[in-house]
Length: 417
Image (tube, rainbow, N blue to C red; front, side, top):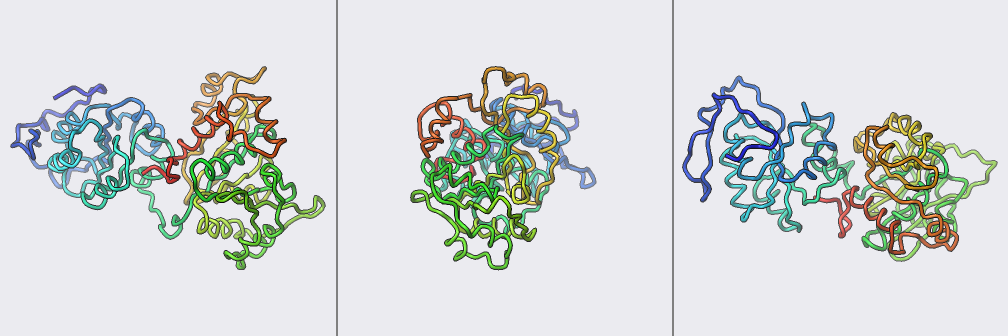
């Protein structure tokens, strides 16, 4: 058996003994059945590359007994290790490198105990392969590589952490809310460009929702007029339906719509606390993605959007103020369907006088999920012309594409897996 790079040690009583060949593969088997009274471990994972192991450890941090539960070994070594130990309740294996993935899974079935939940990752893409694994072979879930934090958190974390997902609540499109650690970091610009990219490059029906009712910023960013129905939808959530949404949105091309208000600056809008949640539920029934700009000031609607969105994205600039305010934003509570980890975007990276990326990451104890360099000529010019910087090939567009990737969005516009 090939040694694990993490030096997995097995009790002498559980050392493997030779077993008959299983579908052409010679696999070790446990020496004896595990007593019923012996408590099984919760999870163990095996992947064959460091990058996948790092993503899994970071995404599952706080939900596993220790980070050493994800090991870097080849598939055959993983089989041998599983055969010589008490199988945990949940097992994650990497099918990369297996010539015949189906035969490899049959071999896996020979070394895990009945009732074990199996999660898999691998290099193969495609809906048919996914369905074969999850419907025909009883695999709980499969993620194609390269792995992303969002993909792991959405597909594997509910299983590993024992989070019961309400299918009725989760049905429909995905919602994400962007906020900034302070004004001027570019959260609104990134929200507009992300929505544009999803609609025009990923070819998915997308809505850009403005969380500031009196400025109409996102309507201006996309060079359209703000509507008047957003306030009514919030104040009378029982009346939110597809007809009201249809009358309130403004179209930008075939797949992108904007929902933004432009209330008077002297008008204070009071709305039902359920208004934002009901609105998002209705919008998810219509769109593949809802990108909400919660703003940096976190006005009432912005706070409600940040609470109810399925994924938070926090935009920072290279400053000490951003580092200080990040902790406060991370402490804000989220709804029951929200991903447990917010994604971090560093905007204006490398700006003169700004902090270095590695210094910020060291100070925060966190890594940025996407980094967008300072582009003082490109981004403002695009905004002034009513166009999007993501439409131009270059560093800004690459940063938006990276953000899509960590959100788990593939070129087909769906979450990975």
